[in-house]
Length: 121
Ligand SMILES: [Zn+2]
Image 1 (tube, rainbow, N blue to C red):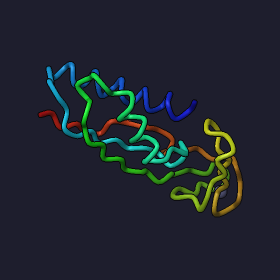
Image 2: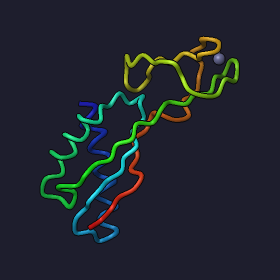
Image 3: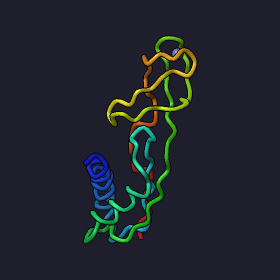
């Protein structure tokens, strides 16, 4: 399960962070999720709540910001947003350059999930 693996990775980072700060509980976790991951915030929140039972993250609120993909085209040097992508495969979504329709593009942003910040209580 793709979603659970990614959510688990985020929680591992958050738990590690909490440990380093000797946090006894966590109020809020701010997560940025690239749209290219095809993850759904509601689904993520549900998984977070489920897998953090009996940890310092139990009961934490999750702020989930979706990050728009940004690409650079290797053909025409277009740099910017994309119109759409086909999430056929989560590792390698098919992305077309909006200028020249090439698929030879670098994904600069929108593919990762990161913990931006945390509020401890
Ligand atoms: Zn292009």
